[in-house]
Length: 315
Image (cartoon, rainbow, N blue to C red; front, side, top):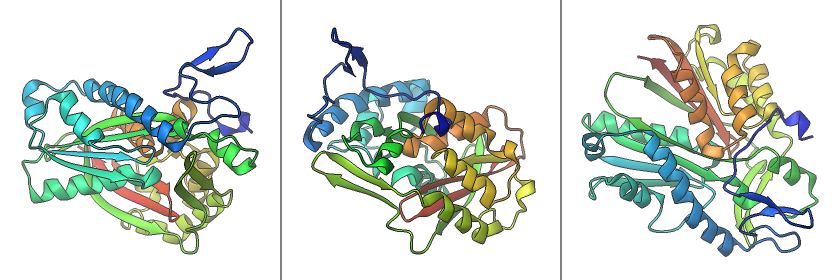
């Protein structure tokens, strides 16, 4: 099943070591067979490692001092850990932002949270044209591994990985221009993806029925997703790489050619499913080759079951 996942590489905050007895475990002995950590211990690890990953992503933006001081809003998405003051506060500290910057945390929305963050940022910029919104999507999915023999849970663990994306939304005419949003809620599917806080980490249920329901739901939504544009007119597809079967279902539901989701499959191959950060990795890859005027559609999937979609174009 791992070989069929179409994932060759994933990142984790856990550093693997091999003991003298040949046993593979993480350097901090967080996950020990027969003694997996409590939720409290996992949140301690999140508070230790998440800021380190946030720092790496934020510094890669290479913002000048002037650009940092011009940031007016900070939005963070995360569904794998929380503490207060949290990652929004950490972002201000790491970059030395104006302490009066407005901060928003979007939590526990799962894989489609980044689309909702972009939606929020767009509202801010439309009401305040001078606003500069810094966004951070950070997930430590491997923090919630469970010791189980449940096949659906085991298969879910083979897909998820850790990752972080930092990005900016402003009124400046560069990069991708956000055009519109649409949420597609699939009826009678709320039990298929659930994410709850348990005694030993966060408990995920990811039903094998999701791809089939998604395929049918996207087919029914049709060109509502693309605001009436024919699918053949979409140059750039940024589909959340939730898994091989999720991408297959999207391709089939929208009757897309195989090459349409090549960028999403590349991110899945090299990074796995990083929950809310994933779609931003796909958008970055598209941005590197996009030409002015090209039309794009982004979408992410999560609890509901919901497909959060966004239309955009290259500037």
